[in-house]
Length: 182
Image 1 (tube, one colour):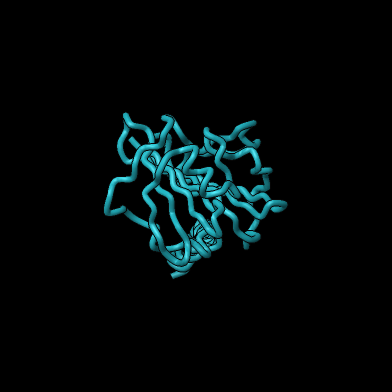
Image 2 (image 1 turned 90 degrees about the vertical axis):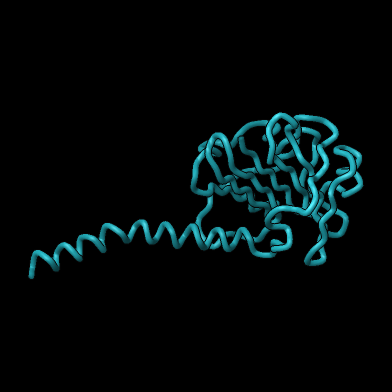
């Protein structure tokens, strides 16, 4: 009986860090997704047009912050407390997504970084006007929901399923989403 009891205690003790990690990551996912429009999740009825200039993607214009890993299965988060902007990267080397969005402070510790250098290769960043996005990338597939607009584009003509999308609020970009895959 003692052996069985100690095995149960050991098993619970071994699982606690993983459970705490899952709870923290669930809390961060909830925080990051707060205010996102569910209408923009999933596939669109029509194929978004290709961006005017290929390739077009979300890139660090200066440098990748120290310690930032953007190729792993679990979400990786960064937060810019000055600008109140967050970055999330999910995926492996060959497929995943990257999102940059305006959001309040995280509920748990998240590595801090200056995210002002993160923009698309054409220079689109949070705060860019909807008109400038159209001028830079061409006419988008426009999806409306939750009082917002989503400008959707296909990217990378050689590989299918890659997208670059901009959430527009009050005629300004408040979120940039990029999906990539093989």
